[in-house]
Image (cartoon, rainbow, N blue to C red; front, side, top):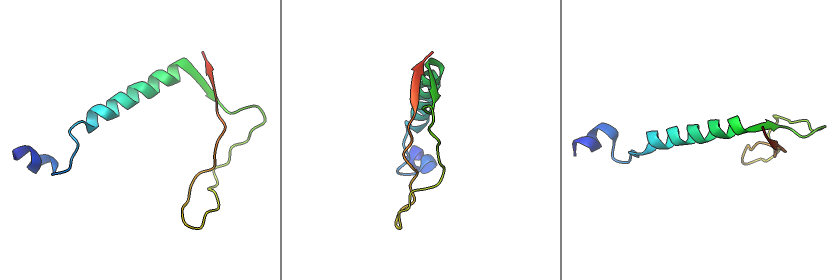
Length: 66
């Protein structure tokens, strides 16, 4: 009962562990691969033209083992 008062009724007890695990996975991935755009590809930060929802453009990315 005391734990619910501190964290709230719907707080996830494993959220901090999940964040740490995701960080470790992402950093390990970046250490093992070079991430770049394909030759001749220009990325745009402009959102897609959708009247209901703003969403980013699709990107092409190349992952090369180091």
